[in-house]
Structures are given as C-alpha cells and as structure tokens.
Length: 134
Ligand code: HEM
Image (cartoon, rainbow, N blue to C red; front, side):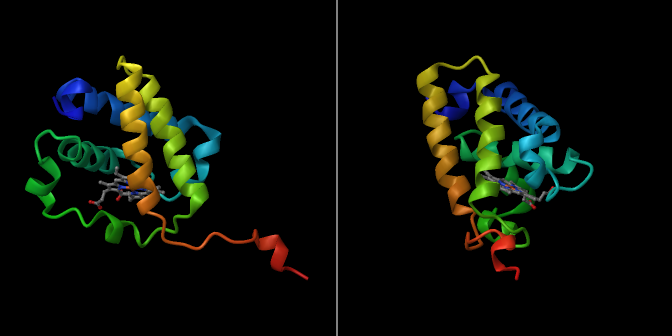
C-alpha cells in the first residue's frame, strides 16, 4: 500500500493540499512564506496537488502535465532558509493533523515531508539583519 492509498487516495491528497493552503493563508506564523506566493493561490494549490499525487505513489499528474518537476530548481527564485522551511512544515504538520490518518502514517508523512522541505533550502542562514547595522 502506498502513502497515497494510506492518505485516502485523490480525495485525501486534495484535502491535505486545501488545508495546507488554508493554514498558510490564516496562520500569522506562516506570513513569510505566504508572501512568497502569488496573491491567488489556486495555481499553487493545483500544482502541489498534482505533484504530491505522484510523490506519494499515486498517478504522476505533475509529470504528465509539466514534465520533470525539477523541484529544487523551481524554488531557486525564492529565498528559502531554515525559517521558511519551518513555516512550510508548520503548515503541513497542521494539515496532516486535520486528516483522519493513523498516527504512524502521519509520522511517516511528516518525516518524508521534512526531508524534501529541507532540500529546498537555498540560502545560508546567518545573523539577523540588525546584527550588521552600526
Ligand atoms: C521549504 C519551504 C518551501 C517554500 C518556502 C516553498 C515556496 C514555494 C513558492 C513560493 C512557490 C511558487 C508558487 C507558485 O508558483 O504558485 C512554490 C511552488 C511549488 N512548490 Fe514549494 N515551497 C517549499 C517547499 C516545497 C515542498 C517541500 C514541496 C513538495 C513536497 C513543494 C512543492 C511545490 C510545487 C510542486 C510547486 C509548483 C512548481 C511549479 O510548477 O512551478 N514546495 N513553492
């Protein structure tokens, strides 16, 4: 059984993506990554749904529509460090908790998401800006 099946197939993945973006829009602690995204999230929502469908072991919808995901390269235009990764994970973990999945599956998914979210980091985390001011 794939993670896609364990999550409840297409309906489960859609629900996960919908709650992920709902949380991103409403949680003040995700404002940093919210602001990286376009005002209208419908395209982002569709792409994440397509991508996760294949990534979780279901139909390869993203590849069928857009070709190879090159996910890291596609994130290079956005500055992603530990804070952004953690905001993304914060939304995803809350979204996973909104779904009726077994705790063991939730943990498995949480770990897998963390690995890939960490791979998206593309900036060196350093001292906050104020440390450099006179
Ligand atoms: C680590 C923190 C992350 C940040 C800050 C971030 C941010 C973004 C932003 C700003 C976009 C552009 C939105 C758009 O084109 O509508 C995007 C696109 C996308 N992200 Fe992320 N992302 C992160 C992690 C991830 C992860 C872990 C995944 C997959 C599990 C993912 C999957 C995608 C997909 C599939 C797209 C659409 C790519 C395209 O076709 O242009 N992202 N992301």
